[in-house]
Image 1 (cartoon, rainbow, N blue to C red):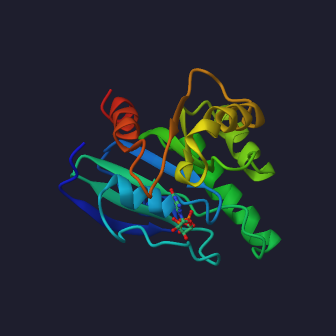
Image 2 (image 1 turned 90 degrees about the vertical axis):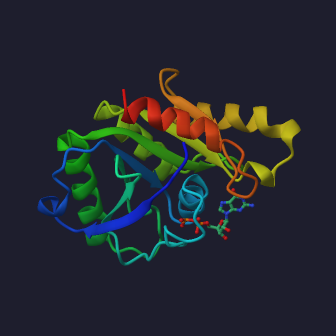
Image 3 (image 1 turned 45 degrees about the vertical axis):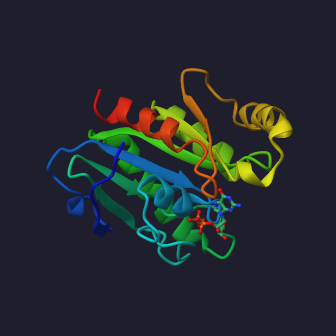
Length: 195
Ligand code: GDP
């Protein structure tokens, strides 16, 4: 998809701040530092729309970006950040849970994981959660440029196994460095957003 406009709309802390225009939403989830902002910037061909390295304090903000005036990217706060307090973690969980449960305009969740390593415990819980709430997911395995191509298959297997990946979901190999997977991910997003 050619991105003509990508605009930051709001950092929402309460559901009554979420947009009410009914446009389709694609959520972006992943643990802190996994490469989620880099992926987002690569997708929309911007250098720095999505701020790199999420601030750990902002655990309760859903950042809305409007793309081509036709859909939203909803950026979840990064999870798994060690320094976040128990109460912040709980607040994060409540907000995300409510959003997953109630948000009717949510069409699909992009879950970003690191292709180099087996999924973390938090990654596994996040995917389990998304499946529990019957959400469609596209796993984006990023940083593919950091391992040799000959090892990609092996890593994909480890990631899928670790997550108990459901074959109905999508899986895209990605690199924010080289642009690998960008077109494939866009076609998955468009399929869900504009179905
Ligand atoms: P976020 O916290 O999930 O938003 O992570 P960032 O996008 O800020 O990325 C964390 C670090 O990983 C940064 O130093 C990025 O430059 C680096 N990074 C992210 N994606 C890639 C990738 O696909 N390839 C490589 N080589 N580095 C990446």
